[in-house]
Length: 160
Image 1 (tube, one colour):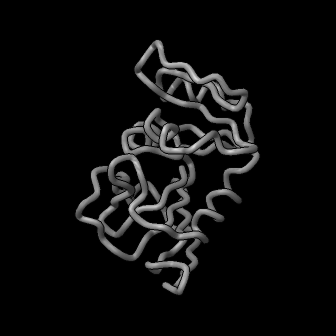
Image 2 (tube, one colour):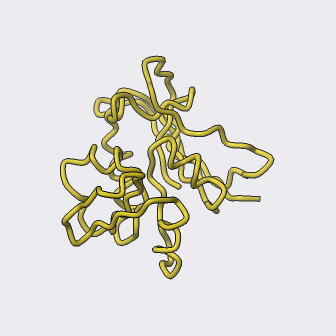
Image 3 (tube, rainbow, N blue to C red):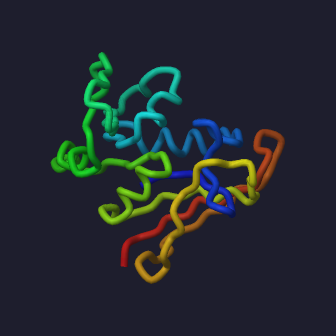
């Protein structure tokens, strides 16, 4: 899984991010390029267009939902999405909140950008990381600066 979440686990409001952190966008692009991304319909629809060089596996309950794009595939459950990436060397669950909750039992790594702020106005949250099931393997701090309104830390968790 890959996500950016505030100290209160906020990840968004009204199907959009609450912050703008260019280096985190670059981090996301570096990690996911060349790999499949599993996401919910609302997350997919938050993109202006499909992200290049990445396969988009979109989960929706709507059996009539279609996306006409060579990089996109529609499925109707997390299990169906995971079957589509069984032969991939790496795939990422990229949200939203419900897809993270459904996908967490299947994940072996969480790439989390922890935003050092809280956002009470958020309506979507990343699930709490259960430290009895996950261990922190790496962390790298990024300070607030002229391009980043908040400090943040890249955290990599591995399933125990």
